[in-house]
Amino acid sequence: MLIDKLNIILNSSDAFSPKYVISLFVKNNLNDIPTMSIDTIALSCHTSKSQVSKYVKSLGYETMKDFKEACLDNISSIERTNKTPFSLQENIEKQFTDFTTNIMNELHYTMNQIDEINLIKLVNNIKKSKRIFVYGHGHARTLCSYIQNELSTKQKEVIICDVDFEKEYHFQDNDLLLLISINGNTFHFDKRVIHHILKYSVNTWLISCKKDISFPKNYLYIPTTNDKYNDYLLRHIIDFILMY
Image 1 (tube, rainbow, N blue to C red):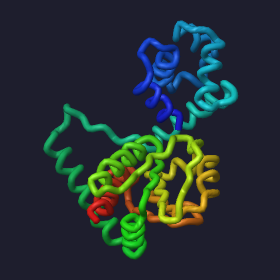
Image 2 (cartoon, helix red, strand yellow):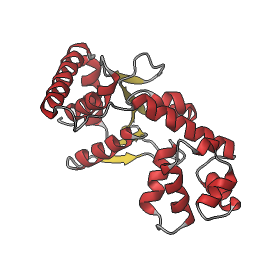
Image 3 (cartoon, helix red, strand yellow):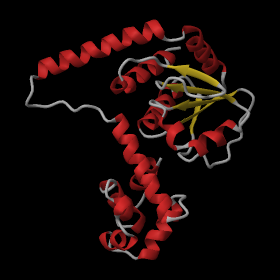
């Protein structure tokens, strides 16, 4: 997803480089980019149109139209996963109590509805795997880093796959590929990536709170009643899995 590419550049590039400057501008003006001309973007970033075109191609987009469509996809994704913010003007204790109560209710629902056989199968598959490859976008990518950190204490090798899954991975018989798509957005916006992933002959698992995803390999569905708590529920399940 575009936002992941922007964050990688912002975290690794010199703050005065054209790539950094354009990435920062795009991230801060994501909602406006689809209606901006290449001239406006170049002028705003104090660079040339050719530099902007070169930048767009470096991100993997053939044209400005493709780049702007990626921006729209990110905007739509953010809108679908946006949480309701709390307010310091409201009663903090009540907000905390309501939030905690809702989380507990969701946890009970998930506990009662989740496919325990499938859950234990995933736990066993992870334990038996020599290497684990993890893939995710947006917040799911932070969970990939979390899994890598937690399993490193158990001397388990974890590789975080690149955001476009363009690198050539050499999977072995005892490897496992774990896909994390909290709300199923990866299947909505990155069908090319999913198609590419499915071509690999490797033990593949998907974890998601999105019901009825058409996925031909192993799929652990995390049942919830309210999408705005999906992040917390999926993180809880990952915490449970990592206990073994």
